[in-house]
Image (tube, rainbow, N blue to C red; front, side):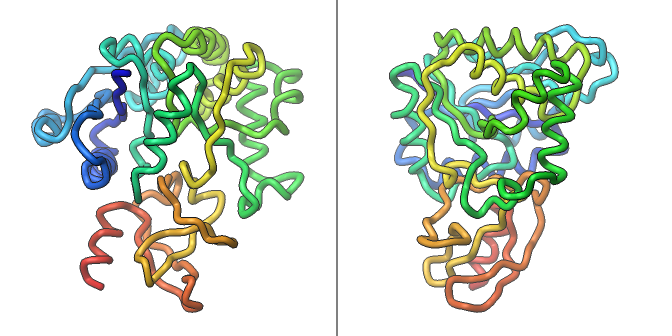
Length: 291
């Protein structure tokens, strides 16, 4: 099946986009899986720098009409246009989406995304892990933000029904281009955008579409999309990699920086001490080079 990895970025996110592309190129076994970019406002120089590293680029539009479109920042097209990805990359029979602030420690997730989506299922991770502290707190900022977005876009009843259902995270997923879920997602998102333009609106829209349409889903382990704002990883000095912060300390496959993008943080190590570790790919690679 003809599959493409798709990433979106504007000029401000370019360093993370470049990092992600480099991490893909480092780990992929060959160049048979193309890398494509949705341009949200890259400069001419950035597009020129990307050209030899990727296989295609498309300029994002506003694919859904909503009241705040005239004042919304260009990067918000990554949320509005995500259900339209098959339109932008029509040659791809399957699309693997990676948020620009993710990067690969290994190739396992890509293999699982390919395998999980080949029968038409949505291959995606759920924001559930025994180390994610927000799951064990009845009230916290993350839950409240999720609930507020549901209420703003789809009303109190939907917020009440959806808030405590674990969320599928749209930062990493794979879906065949012929799946009806794309259209169902777009329809729910269009409804929510009329009254809500929060950053997580597209993720909440997908979660509603999943509850309504009941599509086939192949859930992947959280190491395929480790969201660092929900739990910091640990650092394995011996093997020079980020791992789960709890037993069995499985190596993380895709690191998702989220609010910690570009930061260096103090992490516990498997060897019993602490280390200052950059969470971005280029910083992490520089640390490894320095030893």
